[in-house]
Image (cartoon, rainbow, N blue to C red; front, side):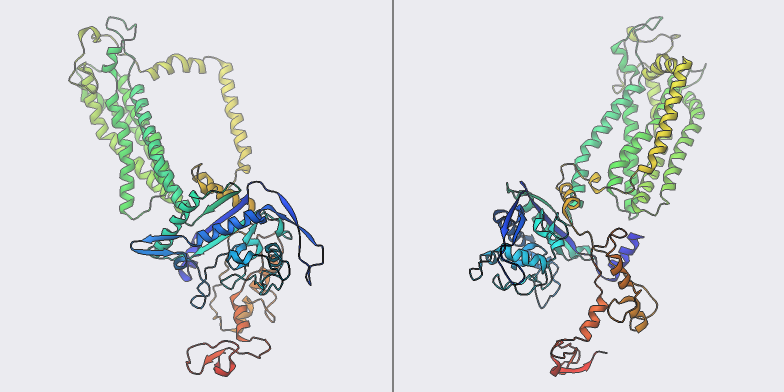
Length: 612
């Protein structure tokens, strides 16, 4: 439901901004005391404790860091892309200022404004303390008459610009937070410039060093970039896994080789080349790989997108479930005694008629299980199940067709005493097994028959212990089920050395405000109807049980909700704009000279008609 509602919101309005964020903490966190400059609201000799991130050396270094970030440019062909081309500018085109939210907005993003005010002996710490308590302040008379409003004419609230502090002690914040929202478009091609800028930003941040601070950062593209990097790195892991599986299959499909004679007594290395199954093992593993590739190709052609789970999990999954039929077929032939006057193809046909139904039932259950998983409405599970079911099905079809032919050829080679791989080389007489001497069993068969089964079933006590341990583990598993955490931790999907992991840790440790939440009302009644307006608005005269009123109440109940602050309602702002109540008895109307252009709310002389 969350995904559907987000898609509808993005389609109706616009996607939420691309978030670029930097969280800075002091490497050696300490505090220091500062005596504030007296004012009408601050008594003399008022001393406050500040955290080390507000110390002059760290604060100015981070100030310069923000200035450097805002100066980053990227290249889009011959065009230079700067921050103002991609950032969110809430009051454009009147004010072309990016909505950067940071404590440096309290100084209008100009480091020269941090210089001491000699008129009142004020320092940047006095202005910081003023803005902690008055983020909407327009005039700090004790510090250069600087406003606290940001350059984009919006507030930079302490709980957004700072992190790691109690509600009433922003001066003890442990982190300085720089948030730069970029415009996000539904048309991906329009996000190209923002992505290029983000790439340069990430490169800059990775190369930035400062021995006094620790930095956590991210951009909108960060998680995708890191997942792509991990997927590329895992290519080697997947290749090694397939090579090891090939070696394992080739070794375990082979048989223990013995010297010639009337009895099989000792191991003969030269005989191993006859009894080995290197070709079959390679073919079996290649079939698994081919089935995965075929599945990816089919669904790519059908327009499905491949996810990280598909690309990294399915190769291992199909490899794990895809080699079992190979062992069933090969070992059934190894244990079989060829009947009189029976040809090789007839022997293989007879054996396949015995083990084929088991292979079919096994593969069918796997395909059906994954197909049932594709009924899930969760896209990741749905796509994964589709890819897996088709991959397992294709692998089974390759095994019962092509692999059977290869098995027939390998059996003829073995009967002819020819070496595996080098099939033109015939074994010498001294290592050939005479007629009438039983073919040796495979190492796995010997281990199970001579060691494992006797040890497991040879004693009543052992059987009792095995069943007891199974029952105990089963009961413990049931007890542990309620303690399982539902959901996916983002860090589990990231490389361990990823900078995004550091950023996610910093979010949980320092940030005071989480992601924004939107409440969108869908109703058949038009919004122009007063009754409908009263059900939504939260100002004077509105329904006490309206949506905004209830959300306002819930925001003050932290034990029940996660709402950090009361909601902002556009309709209440609209009402206030329509009927301003300032000293000029102002009004909101159209311009007389341009009937389709609004006039300022204070310009009544130019007004033509009221809006309502």
